[in-house]
Image (tube, rainbow, N blue to C red; front, side, top):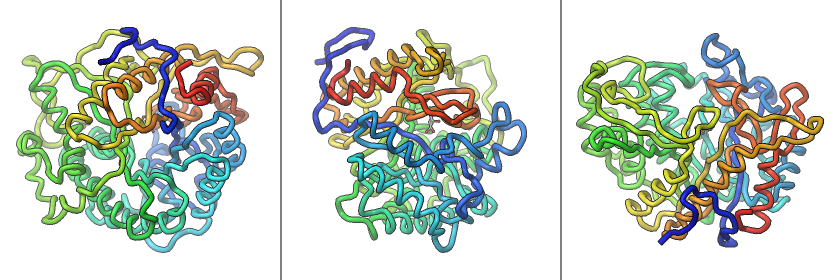
Length: 465
Ligand code: FCB
């Protein structure tokens, strides 16, 4: 039974000593230095440099200049007392054209990052793919092309061999839903393509890349290394049939092949006018279905839907949509506060999500690999502080939710705040600030916000302040 305040604003709740408190970032969002040390272009370089794709024409060319400020950022991470740091490795730094021998300068950079974390007693949690596909691979079809999954395995092997002895947890992919449906369906993300068929094809090739990646890592990393993938699962509420369809396309298209070795029959039926899924070759699902040590879950908000008689069903074929063929589903306004992204704040959705995973996949260890909020921060006291009470409130409510999940028997082993610092928020550029540390984009100076100090307190006491 869970107790506590109905609005999740609890304090004093204690977390187990072994609970992993961390913060997360991703390569393209923070590193900058896009032309340095042999890095090749990624799809996000191409996409952000094409007018109209990113708000304000922002690009990741400089971002937080983390590439040049590694030591300073390592000290910053340590100063917050984090148990773990979740970062991603830029594939085009390791293989500038997506294939072939390793670029030693790229490996050297991540070697310094991992060593720097370990030296400070912080667990490195490495994501191999957080959306920055080498452009050369996109030129061969990107995730529409099955060969990209095999190229990913080669890349995973190179990185595993170099860093495998020091990385605590390997995450193959971050949010393949976004890579497939925003990258190839709606076109809101790189590479900006808009095709239902391509989106479903990408879903499968990403799942396949995960399986091949785990197999490749297992060949070269110590048995103690943990394997994971991070999914952005959708908490869909409302009319049952509409929710079922979105759950199939958005959630079970990943969780079932990954954890059960099958694609859901209802997904195949729902999408039959677009594809017969013949891009799934014999043996693929056995490859996809690798044992996972932990499932990463990114959670921000919920959705409320119903089937609408009014709007025309979207043509089942091509047409820009992150949810192909669901033009007859209406997304309803939700009550409650919103973040700067317009996302509704609802910590009960996190409990619901974690409990449903507990029920569907009993025993599976879960980790919240992203949760956080963008707000308009105001800098005060001559630039020395940011009193981001709204972000503290958001985090308090979601840590409370995580604690309730723990109490109800969810095997939740960690929680990572998105993000360590303000950064390039994809199609929104630098207009949205998710950091618990402020970055001044003129001077690149880092200033811990009040939320960072609050989090530091939480970690030090293992309890919500
Ligand atoms: C997630 C991404 C992450 C960040 C947050 C706000 O979808 O994984 O890079 O942009 O959203």
